[in-house]
Image (cartoon, rainbow, N blue to C red; front, side, top):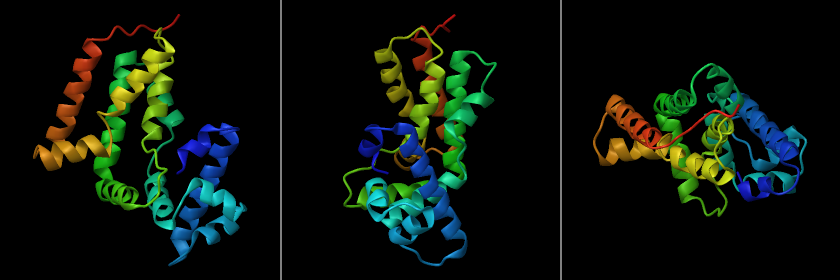
Length: 198
């Protein structure tokens, strides 16, 4: 998805358009053997120009739509963590995204491969992780800069990228990878004073 486009203007409306494109693609994946960006645009009720602002090719859109089927929204993940301390919420976010990645590892690796080999200049991935972390960190007394920095730092310890490193480079299995990444997150959290806002 072309994230620089989403950053400008009416974010909520653009997010709704993106969700409409993804859900339309998922429906087409269920009953159409082959389809194009133009087919998705027509079924979603958006113009060709609009769909190209979000996705540069059908492979990236299809791969993201496939992953999106199994992924909870950041809001749902955040709501499921209510009642926990801030640090436990952060560990819960990490656990959710690492388990999701391992449960759908081939789909995530395929998506990453498509994005990395695409000639597109656009893709900022991992937005769900960052958004979920921001919801948790917004409960704290941290400054906006600290929240943004921690969002970015914590995102490095969850999802497909660190799991590829721990598995393919370090030679760890799934459980060892999850334990190592959790240990890394716990070390970071020990060094940070995070208090809930009153």
